[in-house]
Amino acid sequence: MNKRYKLALATASIALGFGIIQAKPAQAATFSGPINIYAAASLTDTLPQVEALYRQSNPDVTFTNTFGASGTLANQILAGTNPNPVDIFFSVSQAPLDTLENAGKLIEGTRQNVLKNTLAIITPINSTISISNVQDLLKVRQVAIGDPSVVPAGVFAQELFTNSGISGLIQPQLVFGSNVRDVLDKVSSATNDSIDAGVVYTTDALTALDKVKIAYTPPINLYSPIFYGSAVLRQTQNLDAARDFNSFLSSSQASPVFQSSGFSTIPEPMTTGGSIAVGIVGLMMKRKVKAKAKAKPAVD
Image (cartoon, rainbow, N blue to C red; front, top):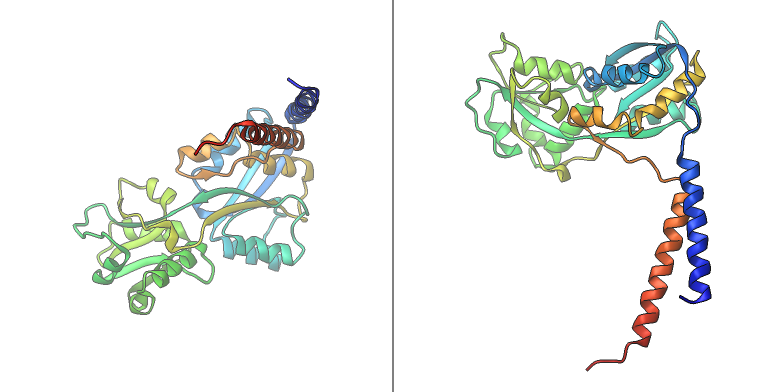
């Protein structure tokens, strides 16, 4: 091993060590007080589980959740009609967060992407209708989707119809729900006698497999990626706790809870030190391979 290679290896070791030191959490501080969260309706079942996990280390924190269509919740925050200050907004789709960020409602540096989801076409549990592609929806009586004006799931559904070539044809069949859970209920309702199908997030369909069935899973290239993002709002009354829980949402502790509900989680970013180390090691290996290639005699 030559001196230059030894020096590079030592540098990489130091950088990697620095990354590990940086990644190692300090003694965790505990937080207290109320955290008021406005969150997408599709998080109704999962978010309380994440909160319960957080409270194991922060028992003095209490949560108040308001679930609904992300667009509706964003409009309430923007208009200041929320009865109590909101600490965290946890939205599906980028648009509601963009609206609040452009209005200066978010604390800089707290916005993050946390989860991903997919669409599912559902039918009532006792349905005999076969759906093997999006175009088959034209054969049913009515199709429930979220109201595209405020429900991101409805926007993704309309995008699915457009990219499948049926947007103009299916509009007369559509029934709009106030949020994605309302759509789920419309399709699964015992009194439903005309809504044959609906478009919801896969995670919502999984919560009601005793009432609906997933008839078809559309290809993900037929609609935009479905991201869930969160941020701390400027109106927060409990800044430190809100910041900490917002970070917890994208942590390795919270990820298994979200994944168990069918969400995909977005990996935590690598620390600066770790990134430097990986870069140095990669450069070293590349140079070493190139040197060996030069030294190797040519073969016809």
